[in-house]
Amino acid sequence: MSKLIIIFFIFIPVLVSSQNIDVYFGSMDRMEGGIYHAKFDIKRGLIEKKNLTTPYSSNFMAFHPSREILYSASMIDNQAVLVAYKIDPDGHLEELNRIENPAGNAAHLAVHPSGKFLITAHYGAGATLVFSLNDQGLLDTQVAWFEHQLENAEKPINRAGPHPHWTGFSPDGGFAFVPDLGLDEIFIYKISDSEPFLEFHGRAAAPEGSGPRHMRFSVNGQYVFLLNEISLSVTTYKYNSEEGTLQLISTTPTLSDEQKAKHDDNRASEILVHPNGKFVYAANRGDDSITAFETDPKTGHLKVIQVESIRGEWPRNINLDDSGKWLFAAGMRSNTVTVFSIDQLTGNLNFVPGNIHSIPGVRCILTNN
Image (tube, rainbow, N blue to C red):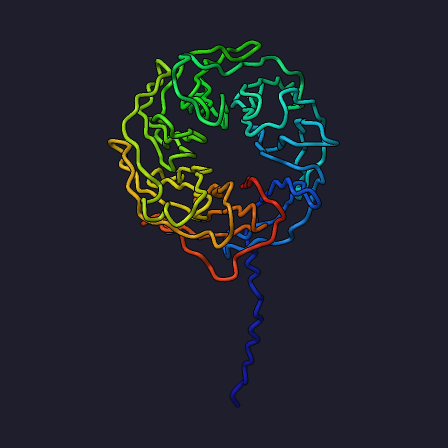
């Protein structure tokens, strides 16, 4: 007599959880301004669980090197301030402290890799300010105010005076750089270990009338890519890390003359370098597009490979996630954020239909992987 053997198969479902990162959107909208927080699904490229995490407006934001604190240039009760926020485990922001910014609302800010201080660029005041941070990353005191002044009285200037617009540091943290849109120059400061942390080191000239706005270092640290707001171009410099100097190599337009002619008001805004070092991206307001460049690692020269619409209006800021797989474009006037995937081989931006999200008056974006 044969025996019937019954085998039971138990199917246990495998739960595949998507990997989410935190994304912050700074807004200066009069009615709904503040910092918005969202989770971003890096597998599917979707923004989820968007909420207003702090009601205080934000013109620009930066992380502490630990990525546990976020700093914001804000206006609170008509007063310009810097605010430090603790980032909780869920990504929400809790105010730690704030300090008055005597030069007015900052156009840009950056935290030194040491975590000892941050610097701010002031378009209206024509100055770079330095603020110390304590051991816990809290804002301490304003320790320096550097006026941007015209070196040659006969030199032409843009928009009636000095206008610093970006702050940042060399890869080794030894020098600080502040492009000045009004003076067509990059101000260079040497970093000190003690207050006031900066000392004036020199200047690098930008093309006349170009209006330098933002800049980035190449991944290998050998080149600087300077975005010019007025001329809508990128100027490449060779960087000498020992001397802290920049040598101009070439300038590449972000848009053709035909593309510029389609709009009366064109202004470049933000520039990014892809983590793989092969590609550079620049945002064009007016044309409302992003220009993708391919880089030559041997010469630093750029070649335009794509000009892609943001499907919104006035891209004041763009940013990448740390993996370089996704690009976010902030349409300030359309109150939108558009998400693009990036082809890792070609550098091309690919829009996924429907991947446009509403953020009122969005001005800046930070991602925290």
